[in-house]
Length: 342
Image 1: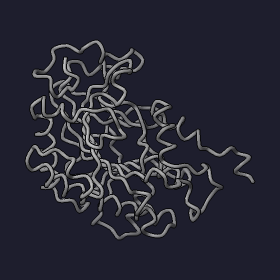
Image 2 (image 1 turned 30 degrees about the vertical axis):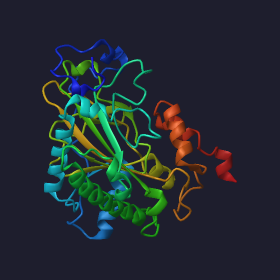
Image 3 (image 1 turned 180 degrees about the vertical axis):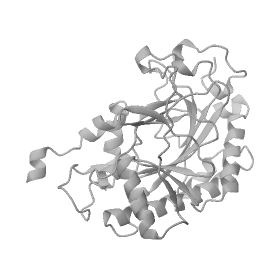
Image 4 (image 1 turned 90 degrees about the vertical axis):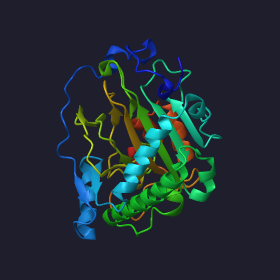
C-alpha cells in the first residue's frame, strides 16, 4: 500500500493494522463535549487596549482564541483551501516527488503520519505537506508548480497571515509591557506552513489524525475546514473545537510561554478522524531563528525567570527527543527553585 494516504485510490473499507492504536490511546466512541466558551476576538470591534486585554486573558485561561475580522480576505482563505485540496488530489507520482522525512535539507516536503514513519509503533491517519514561507522570494521557487495557481495564491496568503500574526504578537506586547515589535525579526524569523489532510477513516474510534502535543513554536494560526476534528485538553477532559467560518484559531506556542515567563499556556491538542468526509486544515507557524537566545523577557514584570536561556535548535531537539512532550522539553530548561531565589 502507498505510504501517502492521499494516494490511496479508494476509501479503505477497514482500518489497516498499523493504524489501530493501543486501547489506552484510542479516542473510542465517546461523545465529546463542545468547547462553547472559546474566546472570540474581533479585531475591528474594540479599541486596541481592549483587544490586548481579551487576548491576554484568553491566553492565560485557555491557551487559544478565535479571531474574526482579522484582515485576511475571506476569498483568499477560500482560494487557498481549494488550492490545497487540489494539491492533495494531484496524481500520486507528482505528490510522491515531494515525499521526504528530512527536516534539514528538504524545505518543501510531504510525508504521512509523522517524520518518524519508519520507526513508529503505529501510524497517524494523515498526510502532511510543509514548506517555508518567509521571506517569500527565498522559498517560492521550491513550492509546487501544480496546481498552476499554487504559488500565486499561497504566496499572497502567506504574506497576509504573517502580517496578521505579527499584529497579534503586538497585542501580546501590550499585555506583557513590552515594546511593539519585540517579536519582529529573529524571534519570528521562520514562517512554516503546515497542511494536514485526512482522508475518510473506516473507524475513527481506533485511531488519531494528529499526535497529542503542544506546539513548540512561537505562535500558531490555524484555518480549519468545515469538518470537525480538533480537540483540546481542558481540565483533564478532551473537548471539541468546532470550526468557526472565516475565523483563525490562534495558539500561543511554547516559546511564547517561556518569553512570558509562564504567564501563557500552550494548549495540548489532538485531531480525531472522520468516517465520511476528508478534512484539510492550514497551519501557519512563526518560529524563532535557530540560534537566537530564547528566555523570559527582562521587561516582563513578575517573578524571577522560570527558565534559563536556550536556542530554538536546542529546544526542538529536546522536544523531538522527548516524544513531543511539552513538559519534558520545558523541563530541560527550567530553573530550579533555589536558582530563582538567588
